[in-house]
Image (cartoon, rainbow, N blue to C red; front, side, top):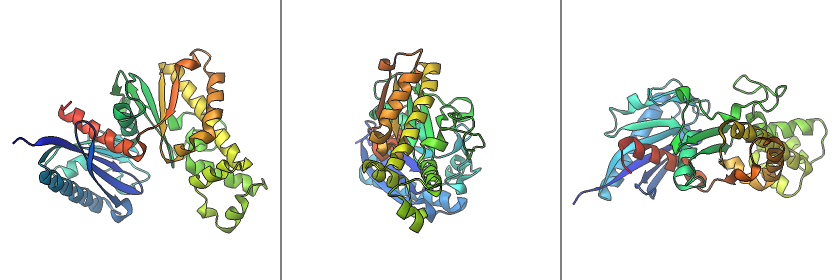
Length: 325
């Protein structure tokens, strides 16, 4: 009896390395996870990935499945055709790593590399909130702000994989200097790390908030989720942070929509769980900014696949690459 085909999707993040065995229809049959910190250098990381992939192979064998390929998502700047991670600020061990070439002699399947935000968009377009849309922008809100662009039903990588870096669209020319070197990037307003930094600045200036006690006793304990809880309890400072975030997102999305005429935007990532906190401000800003595009023609919605969007996007990347439909 012929074996059924499957692929492996990998979502390699700054905190965890997650793998899944996935069918042609996007069903996750098995999954594995390990802490990225357990692989602190490049050699250990490559060896760890190879070990995990071989474990996937054993699982596939026990299920009478044949692995066709591997899709690998990495945060940072990647060069898919070269199989190289150029820069991965959240996974420094991967900086300047020819990861596909290094994995090739260690595993028996082809490996296909892509940026993790692109794979988030690919996953949501395949099976999530973007399904059925020919054009779609995916936005991830977390420690930073990432993006992935679908045009005519396909991932649009741009020159050297640089398309859809919406996190580095300027929303305030005189704003804070971003880690990328530019000033006033969307990321400096709409990401969890920068939102927390802004709240701490306001507290240092004497702004009232029930977050003050936490800031004074243990400022490092304040995270994006802390702001979400505070805003849900109608803390004015936390609500202001999400209002700023929503307006900045509206401005950036309007810029992209005016350029490309997109009708669907899907927003996900851990910080996007605060959807109800920033949705109104984002919608109001979009209505102000979309002067040449009918706002009612634009559908902006939260992601549907949760933490599995990147995994499923990686799997879809592999399926397309090996020619399976």
